[in-house]
Length: 104
Image 1: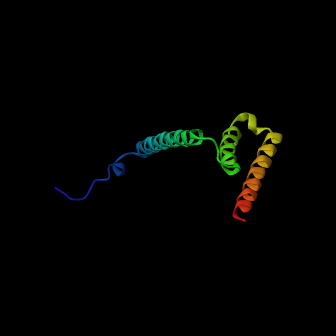
Image 2 (image 1 turned 45 degrees about the vertical axis):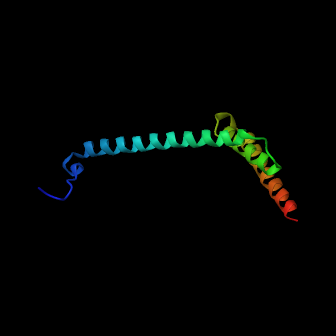
Image 3 (image 1 turned 180 degrees about the vertical axis):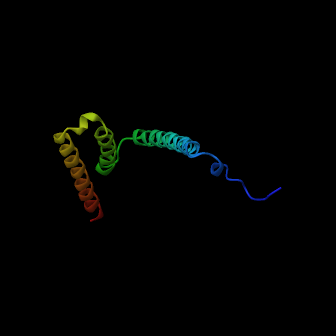
């Protein structure tokens, strides 16, 4: 009997090793997607739990929704891409101005 583990992959052909690696990666990706879906659901519960208490909080909610839209085929239009970028910059600028105003 030996105390060392046997690396079975070394005894398989290249095609079998590649198939095994693909299966492992696929399982990993599926697990990651499931975890991401759960985290997104948790985020949406938090975002809908209460109305925004400030413009900064409202901007965060808007950024999230704009990000969802930006991932759709409809957002690939160059004019919409520019509009999305401009709105996100506006939200960032206005949120920063609000934060600076509150600090004074």
